[in-house]
Length: 158
Image (tube, rainbow, N blue to C red):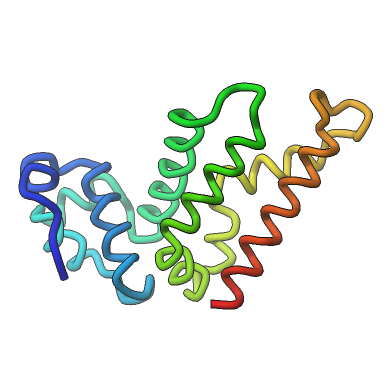
């Protein structure tokens, strides 16, 4: 197990540092094997710091996925260019493939599938009648559906 640079965790015991440690541990091994002890050792903080920010590992997981998705959208997606955003999310999913495979393979699969912001967006988009969707919403919905199906298929194969 490697650890984050001292400047990243040791002096900055916050949500972001703990989340970064979580992602790194998830790249290295199964979700079910990650413990609070692993995270605090990796991040060089105490357990109280972890519990100050998160109730448990599932709360950390939800936060990490939400932050990851929001960061992609905020930093890389332009308003009115949803297909570009979907492409970037797909690229990031591939970059973190091991982490997502471990999440999908865990006993928390259903929770994981509900956590992503893009899945929430897809669900909301489905509720809008076809004729009322702005900017080719019907096409956008189909694109999101294809993307969602691809993610699920990719995860099931691995």
